Image (cartoon, rainbow, N blue to C red; front, side, top):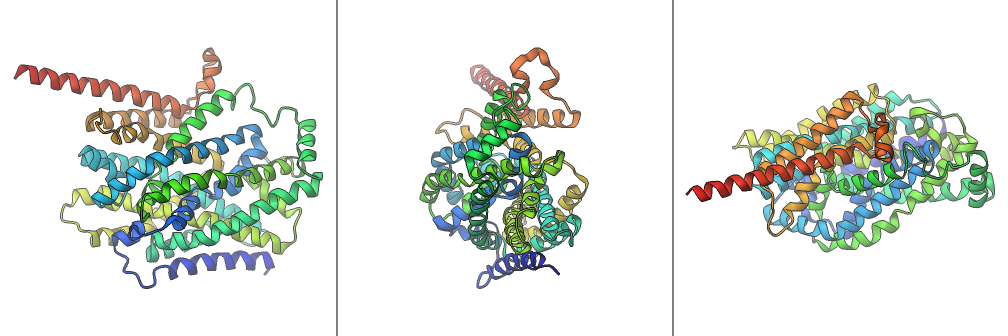
Length: 486
């Protein structure tokens, strides 16, 4: 057994051990299991939210898109920064409302704001559809990391199964407490590993950053800029807008807001998290360094660029440390996604149909559903071939359709009622589903010129807003006519 495999196995053991230990001294009822008893301070809220955002997408997808696409990778820096800025104003009122109304999930918020159980169930369905590719992303990354870091001793398929078993074990036992504890180690590790690689690799191969970028520009002119077509400035702008609006619309991210002890934690984090974003710069540099050193990676294999370069550079014990860190980047967000997914099913799909179901019964059902959802996502992981970035963007297309009725719900006088909110979400999600299933792309319509590069999620969002406005106006007109008739 190689030293790399030993270190990766130790990373797994540490994550599982912390996850299991986190429940010591706590009765894991629904509130403790899902939202940590609403008692996390600024540090834990920061680590939990960073743990959800800095995932295998950061570790592999970020370097993969930098390797495969070049300049378009910078959209990641822009959208997360914009999402953090908006969180300064958006998140505190959400927390206060959730605290006052004892909410557990994202659909609870929508259902209570609009007084509609049906809307809550719709939001839950949208969330589940979006979460599956996000969890597949984590399992896919885990398979790549363990298989590569173990020098092939453990296949990616076996790694996915091991990861799913580990997640299931500590999620069932510890819930969100396990995620928070593991996030402490994970964020410390990823900060050290990514910064080290982002500094050492370009210095080692090119003598510094100037040498790196000069070599790439000479070998592949224009690679570090946005292309005129495809992932052009139009694509970049619309993708940044879509993902910034959807940043806090993910069910697991939204639910993590409920864990805070007080709303000031979000404003403090809104100041810190954009600085923490700088980690991504080092991730991009790793991908750029790999362009010339491990050429020829295409399709989903671009996600291997970080590890291919590391294998060619470092001894096995360093590869083991990188692999163990990668394991944590999959397990922490993966656990949060699992918790959110099963809670949506139990609390927002099953519970409304069984009025006598209490918190204890809901918590039991959540834990029963954990291995079921994990198995579903393992199935998709082993049969899918999309790159990590493609998987994440597909999920964003869905969750961003919740944003219009979310933002209006925060107004003092909400101009929408449940019918307009439901109609808009259905229209937006249907548009996304139709384009994904049919393979349609605006790129097939060259008559549109630069607009053919608009992100299809923005098209769906525009359809969503138009339908929402039309239905809202129709409802108001109908109410006015009825009032006049009286």
